[in-house]
Image (cartoon, rainbow over all chains, first blue to last red; front, side, top):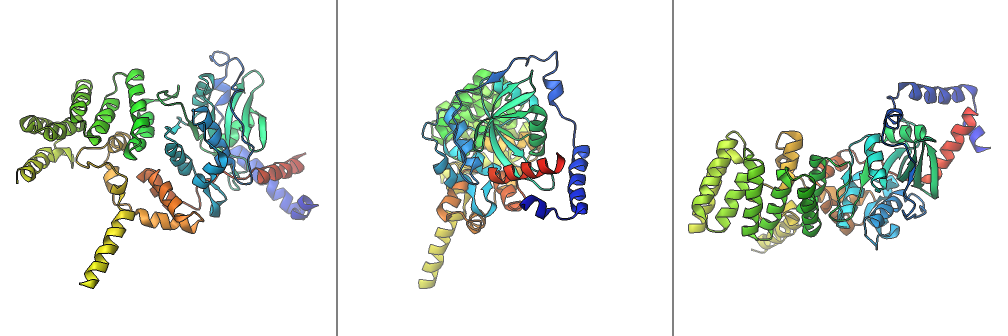
Length: 323
Length: 115
């Protein structure tokens, strides 16, 4: 038999068992017992049964898991075969995390990478969002990387429920699940419908997820995301800077000015707002206002390599315009 | 004269492929939201360091790993500079989520070992 023949000698078997125990001893403490403890709000079973399932073809758990969460976020033509061409890396026989993020952006969705912990996972599940996770189903030194989608949890039985590989409804002990997820550094991605923000999101993480879409000129998705952020975190200036920056790129300079102005009220000491405001004034021919805003940006961050030279940059642009 | 034409064409083509501006916003004068969040996270202007990233080299690397050249370019264009840097630095070590068959085999081996 294959398994016996690979483990011919007792010493080798001993070594393998030894590695197993060593890795078990050395690993960090698990979080789940605290998170589902008696005083936690998570005491009832939840299972997102409507989550679609795509049986994995060989090596293709990445595309299958991605298709699952994209479908949930309303990308109705998300298809594992098409996604495979976007995320599958033949020489590695698998999909890398950044490829998963990139393909999500290509579908005009925000790939939100959760704060890496069990509490975020539960927060998302109870909010109705399945979570795409990276697991190591092997050993730390002999990793077997795998993507799956967590669709439910039963705190009473200490079980999680996943769409995984060829198993439509895999029930895994919470303890074992957390070990495998811990070895994947608790990496989990949530993809919501446009204008919806993941329940566990914190502002900076969220803006980090949205900004690349703006950079890639996927403006519709980015605008929906920033507008949702203005509702969720009305005190955050970054949403308004984002909206302003998109308006600027689309040459809607008056709109940009409005957004930057709003941002400046929320963050009166933040140089980038006034720097961008200066350019918006300049583009509208409001040269004196441009100079004032630039001077203010410079005053707020005199040592910054960019904002500290705001006036010079604006003067240079004015001079080249005049010539 | 012919030589300069060749150089000119090569240069134009080269910049088209490797210039990040090809997908960057049309106006580079304002500070981008991407730079803002990068600064907020890192406290330093890391974004400017990575601006010089040669996307053509990255594309070549992906092609070596079996991706179609056009598809490789589209993958790169869907990633951030930080993601591309990490990809090129660690392409062999990064987790590549993959095969369920190996998993089942492994679980079975472990089960045989510990029963």
